Amino acid sequence: MTRPASNLKINGLQFRRGSRVVLDAIDLQLQSGAVTAVLGPNGAGKSTLLSCIAGLLRPERGSIELDGTSLHSLAAMQRARRIAFLPQTPEIAWAVDVQTLVGLGRIPFQGVSSDEEDRAAVARAMTKTEVAQWAERAVTTLSGGERARVLLARVLAGESDWILADEPFTGLDPSHQFEAAELLRAAADQGGGVVLTIHDLTLAARIADRVIIIDDGRIVADGSPQEALTPQILRDVYDIDAQWLEGTPPTIAIHGRATRG
Ligand SMILES: Nc1ncnc2c1ncn2[C@@H]1O[C@H](COP(=O)(O)OP(=O)(O)OP(=O)(O)O)[C@@H](O)[C@H]1O
Image (cartoon, rainbow, N blue to C red; front, side, top):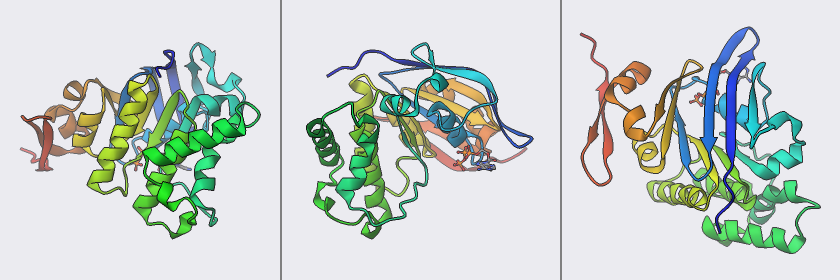
C-alpha cells in the first residue's frame, strides 16, 4: 500500500527558551517517501525541532505547514493522526501492559476508526517489532531495549503519514537497531515520511536518504549522506577526525578528536 505524497514546509522558524534562541532561521521542505536524519551535537536543537514539527512546541516566529495547511490550525487529534511522535526519553510511569501501551498509538483515531481496525493496527505493529510475546507483561518489567521496541510499536500502530522519532535506536542492540531501522525504512518506502534524530553516523548514512545537520540551532548541512557528512563538516561540527571507508555499504570511521595544527 502506497500513501499519497505529503510534505512539511518549515519557513523562518525560530524557537526561544526564555531569552535564548534555541532554533533560528530554519527553512526546510520535507517530502514523504523518504527517511530524513537530523544530526548534530548535544544541545544543538534537534529534539526541539522535532517537537516543533510535531506541533508540541509553538515557535515564536515562522510557519510550519502540512500539505499547505498551517500545523497549528489543525486540532490536536487531527494533527496526531497525521504525525506520530516518538519522544527521546518517554516516561512510563505506570505498570500498563504492553498491548495497552501500543494501543495508545490509536488514541487519535477514537471515533474515526473501528475497534476492529484499531486492534488490527496494534497487532500489525506488535508483530513487526516482535513485541507480541510480551503482550500481557507490564511495560515497567521490560529492559530498556525491550521497552524501546514497544514504544516504536506504539508509534507504528498509528500508521500515520509521518513518523518523527527522537533517537529511536538508543538502547537497542545492533541487531534490533537494524530491525528498527528497516521498519522505519519500510514506512518510508510505503510512502510515509520519516524524520529521526540519531547520533550514529554510519547508521545515519545507511538508513537516511537525506541528512540535515544542526549546530547551535541552525542548519549547517543538508543533502545526501555523502554531501552532508563530509570530513570537513564533521570536523567543524563535532570536532572529530572522520573519513568515509569504501565498502558495501560504506561506513564512516571516526579516528578521534580533531587534531588542531
Ligand atoms: N525544557 C527546557 N528548558 C530549558 N532549556 C531547554 C529545555 N529543553 C531543552 N532545552 C535547551 O535547548 C537546547 C536544545 O535542546 P535539544 O533537546 O533540542 O537538543 P538536542 O540537539 O536534541 O540534544 P541531544 O543530542 O543532547 O538530545 C539545549 O541547550 C537545551 O539545554
